[in-house]
Image 1: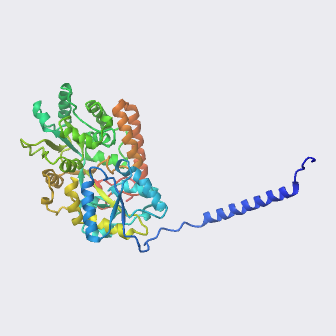
Image 2: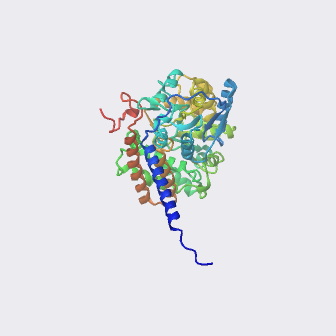
Image 3: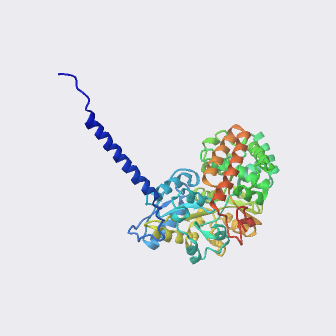
Length: 474
């Protein structure tokens, strides 16, 4: 056989045809891009589903309260609720799963979120921003929640997108009374007293503070409480909005004291989560744990024979003393769990669940087991099984200032995640240079994200903590 010659003309024709097809497809794509994106539906078609998917991080030892709430909701409505948990502190990872479902047109009926800027992180990631979520203002008004003090601090520019279901307090310290008695020590009420107690116990070989590196949040939580004790509520709110100067001296002082106290953590602190930290205090293997009053719910449900008492009502049979973190007396560092509802085919079910959960009935079922208190000030305190919760109702009513917890909802998700991890690195390495860079970047990012959102907490007439951020005009 002779040599095969190139098939010039037919192959050239084929290339031209392919090129024409590509040009046509590109033109069609360009035209489609010019078509405006359809706005999100203001109302969703009725759903045929009869099951609610609720994204929550209450899957472990905090399940008692949410299981009781869901059980009552299902008994009342006949609608089952399926809890879905995505690992990750305070729903950081769950947010991405929820946003992906929203973009796919299959959002969950409801999800757990903290009141405050945390919900704005969802707006930033969703295809249509806040329009992808059901505004809950009218629902909150309907159930009498809107005008409560807790309801008012959950507003963004006067609108509610996350319905509060409780009120937690973050600035607490849980202390083992037997250790204090054994070494003749008194419960510390100032930072200097706490440092002195920790020095004494460390000399005796007793771990003073026990915080957990496994879930990270209690480490940054501890830094936050030290900062709150030094800075006071006004600077604390400025940190939340990102308007605090990064060279404010309280940031350095708080970090120095944090590093001093971090040296008293037990040697295996990196392997502990917050529930293990509580166990160390309850069983007398460490002196104190800095945390929120969800630890009250944990102790009540898991250690029923352990008596808790507030610092102003210490009894001989008390095992765990609960007190405001030293130096933060009179301040209520708030953590407000809430329910959000994405728009979608089943949003009516999500709204029904949110209204029940946030109602007086729902909160009266949920909060006694959660360790928190209800958002409604007129709910009688006899619903609470622990003296600590009754004490917290009094503490909140008498508090001189309220601030959102930086660790639990007051920061945008990306800022929170960075601070969370880098504070653990700080405790491990003592690298203050890295930490100050993190703080500076966090403050700048917070301000930028708040400014770009155009939002603020509360209303123009009644801004949160009396602070109207500088990007609010007029």
